Length: 452
Image (cartoon, rainbow, N blue to C red; front, side, top):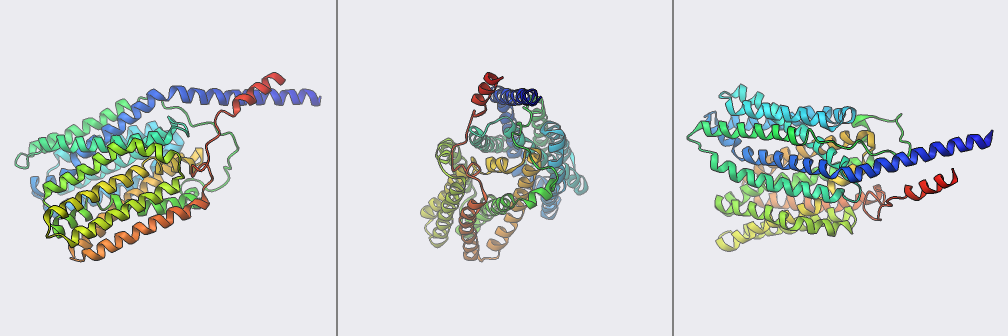
């Protein structure tokens, strides 16, 4: 009797492991096409953002003639939309999968963009801005979850790095093309601009929303399901909580500054011409495009916490160059070179982070809470990017630029410290400290089949 029970358990084990290997093989072989479509969707989304974001303020303030206060309210509502929808976005991804959430987000963004281009009064613009922001924000964690589903532990860093490169390319090309369409004296040109963006989000829904995304990877160990759920589980996860605090500081200090605080410092304090500032931002994008794939190879052989700390060290060099630019601002050529180098150094740090932050979130997340973790991470990002410009512009605008640079340098040193102190909370695999064990189930299957 015991022999029969043992054989039954053995056969069940063979079926389970065989099924697991088969699912993993299908994921490895079948995810290439869907992953390409997801990356195309990332590029389309970024193109749409670059196409209109630089011109939203001008559209509200000058084209519609509603003033800077109304324009500021539009951006505030756009940011608040993220806070409103992200908690529900994560829950929706975990319950229904990333595809329906992406389709809903694309529909919201397309509706908001189209309505924004046709709105003429403040109430209509605010409602459109909320729909627009909610849609864009909803798409982000859905796309991140799709990348995780379509990649393996070995290819995930490359996939996230490619996403970051395509986003920068898309936004740069979008801004360039959009600038050729915009004519402040012709409101219809801005209406066309936002209508085209609405079409890009419909394209995102068509290309990526129809892709056959692999199911969640099979779990080889039993996960506890009696613990906290949703965002409560994220908050209870000490490693993820520390990572979110670190990510918030990263986005506040870098992404929340180089298009606002640093731009204000360059133009108001150093006296950099707007055209030169455009060259500096272009240098940032070019640095990312050129270095990104090299950084993937470098970080593949390093701890992720080391890569994050290294990004902080590089950014400390950027803030040092900002101090140099402020001190030699009367020397136009030298100060201009210093400003351009700030943006280039920011790009180096961003290239170090691109193959690091997204994959580590995926590795920390339990399979059942991947959407929640991605949404929580996106929420932290949105808050930091919303707060960063306000703090930066306030300090620079008040004439206390040395205090601004000192505060940002202090935050950057804190990034290095927090990245290194995150290390004890991560496993070797999560920190990329040891090569992942791959294909171990295969010999087990053969042994079991032989024994059977």
